[in-house]
Length: 116
View 1 (cartoon, rainbow, N blue to C red):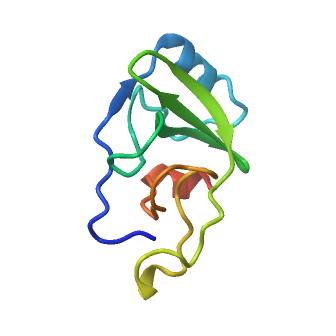
View 2 (view 1 turned 135 degrees about the vertical axis):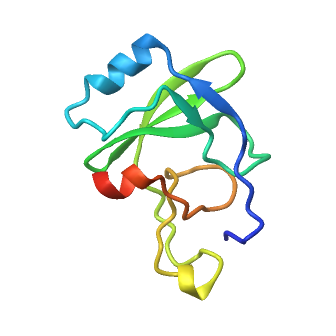
View 3 (view 1 turned 45 degrees about the vertical axis):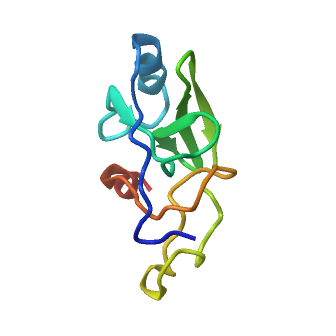
């Protein structure tokens, strides 16, 4: 469940040339692949940090990283719906990947709605 006090993790990553080339080679171009991404998980989450890099059809390519390594992994959308904090948000889907740590989040980056 998401509440108004949900705080997003402040961790950031700068993608390297190989990661940017990977995103550039996907069959559907994102409106803009950013070279710097911020973690989209709840602050204090367990495991690696994660940020959505690009969506192609129903597959989302998430950049996941720790202090020592990073990788790009395919996921699908988290199926949570209607578990979000208030009645007014009940019609929103979770904006994270299936199996994410921490609470669900309905916060979506602007380009996600354009690409969907």
